[in-house]
Length: 293
Length: 293
Image 1 (spheres, rainbow over the protein chains, first blue to last red):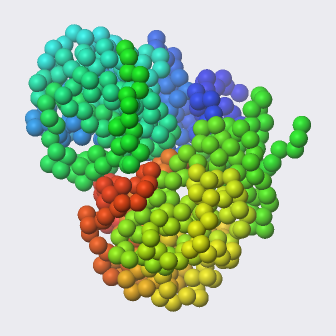
Image 2 (image 1 turned 90 degrees about the vertical axis):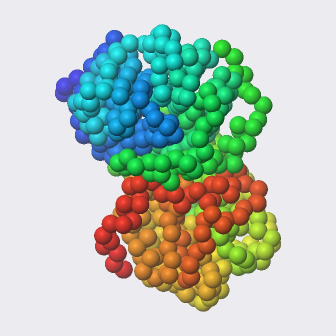
Image 3 (image 1 turned 30 degrees about the vertical axis):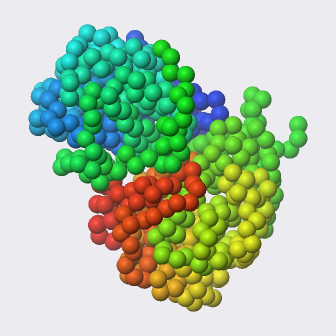
């Protein structure tokens, strides 16, 4: 039998990807076919065609986004800040190599430039080719690809962007820096006076410490901070949080207008995502967790 | 080594429950300990203490509810109809053997009687003893336990209940009948003129056919039908749907008042759960699926 890529097992005539980065929970996806595999300088990159979720992007054996539900995350991280901003012209995306956020940002006619800063060119290449459901096979001339480190990139700009969207992976390994105060301080400086930044801030149920920590770190730097949630079916915990930061007051969610074509987001959902469940309101009122660095 | 209960495997010094009722997705939970095991006349009943989710109710090897997140489902299936009803006095729960729905209904002072119809007494006994986080170890005298078939029970009552809550398991095996028109017709008859019924109607993402079918069947019988959603972290797909039916117009969600102690539900969430994502609004507008029987 042919050599199987790392992370893929063969059992009773079937192929399976088993995520085993968690100690106490393992999820196995049945796979039809390996569409892409490459060991990049940064990670092991695959696109696997799965039975239940269609083609999925898998980095170091962990599912990042799927054709079935990737649009939910991408629409919700993008359209909340973009629809809240009165006139977003220059957009920065940190991470987001699957190109889904760039695709959503490109739906705004007034957006003139979209800088996508992804360290791993292989992720962009694989997503454009094999994940069109997520990436939209983006060829919009307003998108500029920067294959470089997001932390360094942000450290070099001042008052440049109307919206900054931090589409990071989990805070382990290289992405850890994207949850630290030094990075948030650079985001603040990179933002225009009336700009809005959004950071994915993990699951309120399974990573509540990370969520609270990034919320508190952002709160200490920005004049206004607000948390919202959405459902992400293929992320463990289902419920996912995002944190907005702005140098001035953010508009009332009820004033959000939205008329872009989208599969998940609509005006009601973009307004309603700020209605937090009881435990989350409680959590945000609690004493700060250790918010050092 | 001691004989392990069915569905539990031992690997490298660790215990695992692997749900394998799905063809293309397997989820394995690491287990600390088996708290309860019994082969009832209806199914294999276990309560397992898991590392990530605490004690969980497991029927025929499939996780039904967990101490970590069971309250979300139970609060959302209960408080939407109960808070919408002007004066719920008599409540019927079909299924709900984990007692979580009865616990929520018991928070309403005006509720005088709660009939809980669960076919399997072992589920109630195990949940009261080993799942207090879900069941609340309920000893409220207003709760009457009926260990009998829900379909038959409902067939024998007329205009009895203010709220009926159908907390069914998946529509396979015995629970299949709880998704059929004959059962919905009996629900309609069992309800008082100003009564409200709610049925769990599965995942809009992974079981959209079941969801649409039960929505359509309920729509054809009730004067008003409305769908709402919540997140259920341990159900595959994360997003879950519920369908309300009423013989007269339902109140505007914005008029919902809610002042009960709860961990997930609050007034904003109970009002906001009717804001459906774009694809769901589309789905409900489509041509009916085959809605026979």
